[in-house]
Image 1 (tube, rainbow, N blue to C red):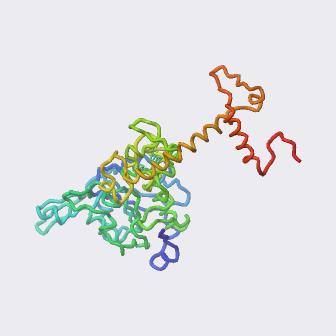
Image 2 (image 1 turned 45 degrees about the vertical axis):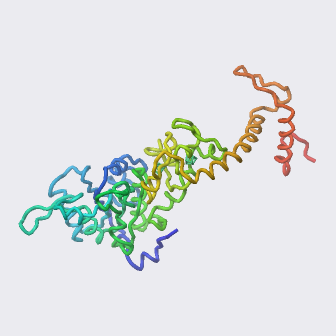
Image 3 (image 1 turned 60 degrees about the vertical axis):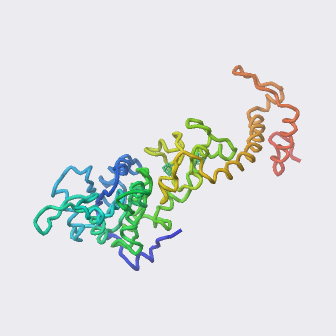
Length: 388
Ligand code: SF4
Ligand code: SF4
């Protein structure tokens, strides 16, 4: 786990001044589907409005410059980008990158470009589009932080899949390992296709609070992911993990059991969607029946293909679970049956339910329960027993 520490930052940077009340955030889109923008505006804790209205105590108000959400257009929209790229904005700013960085050299060979925003005049006075990669490079030099949003920006993602014609890569690939923002941060990466909106806004606010000298030091892993969001596997937070442990597996989509045999990579994938939900605490892949296809991981999509087929490692792990799980789950069912009875019902030898017949425990079950209770109350008296 790579930790940025205050001492490290102090050597290379200064934190934001105490009296800063506003921080600009420039959203730059490369090769993307705009899904990360949609995800961000769906965030609820905190919401984009919380950031832009400055309602989070201690956090500077965020002035958002977003090509889709902005109300202004043309040069009045582009002007702050131009100033920031020249280091003349006169206010601190962060750069938020969505989408892959395309190899514009390839496009230029045929006189085109892959993705861009605004234009500069060429030597003939003709307008030429400014590629997104150029904006990122120019602005990164002066930015307080560069935050890559979504798997395309963090690792390359779908546009960088095998066979792509664009030579697409990530923001980290573009800026290189030696890159540090003006306040000493390497590129921060929030992966996901699309990431949960809350992961985006929470990371932005954590970085801003820290840079403002108010929040705790955020911890990032060796790939620049917020460690508190991406430190655990999907599997550990999955609502179906109990089925996995007891060796019960879905045979087809729509089944309620563990989805590993219909293509879930959750045991190895770092993602918190099952705990956090997709939007406003609701949804999330396995919660709604979808196997994990590894969309937060640098190897996505090629390393997880073909989708919806049993991952090879499952042959070992799920079969072990099947063997141990069937034994464990039968023992648990016996314990569960006895815990579903009151002391009175045990004494009466009958459960007076009008909803259905509850079978009395067999001799074997009674013996097993007797042995179980011996262990349970080995070190403490059983309720109702005489204490010696
Ligand atoms: S559905 Fe996937 S993440 Fe959930 S328990 Fe099964 S393997 Fe793990
Ligand atoms: S559970 Fe898997 S597919 Fe779903 S968001 Fe997380 S990494 Fe992506």
